[in-house]
Amino acid sequence: METTQRVWHARQDPRRNTSSIGIYSHVRDRWGIFYAQPFVLNVRQAGVAIEGVVRQESIETSQLAVDTHGYTDFAMALARLLGFDLCPRLKELKQPHLYVPRGTVIPPEIVTVCEANVDTALIEKHWDTLAHLTASVMSGNTSAVAALARFGSTARGDPIYEAGVRWGRLLRTAFLADYFVKDAFRNELRRVLNRGEAVNALKRVVSSKCKLIQCSD
Image 1 (cartoon, rainbow, N blue to C red):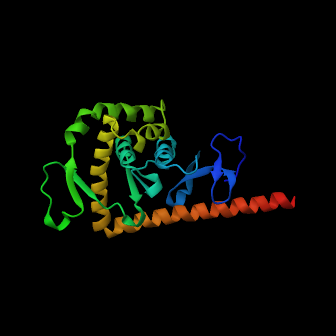
Image 2 (tube, helix red, strand yellow):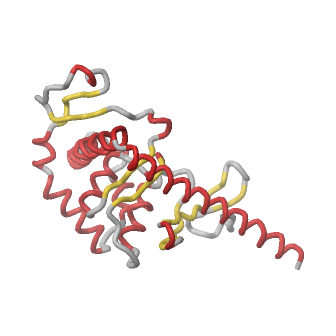
């Protein structure tokens, strides 16, 4: 959405070369848009995706479908701690790798796409800190946006980040098992995400029409 440079979230939209903000909308079937919030363009949207589920008060959410930009391994762990599953449509399935705990015997059929390198002891060691972070997001003392900015890719080497990422990888492995095996689940995920894209397209049309009306006035 085009805006002025004075807006805090405003950034230069590279496609239109104008000051703009993103509007992240949560959509659920007949409910239409049940939550919307601004976000900074050209950054990963996992934080706003999770924040919308936590802050909205209309419905209970057990699964949240997101595109690749709305997903990180740490975000997958945080979402699960908050009580729902992040279900990403990984772009062209370029991230189908599976991870299991150390010492797990990998079947020969999947040995080329699976690694037994998840340190569950690290997850257990920092579980309480991850729970405290989750409580801070749930209570509003911090936002999911701020939490995931703190524990983004630049936090590599931080033990809390590493614990969250490893648990997120286990969750992603479980998700991918359902995605590849359950046709109904995969088709529903695609349908929901396509519906969200249709809502975005509608918003762009409405915005452009409003601009034309303003110009004619």
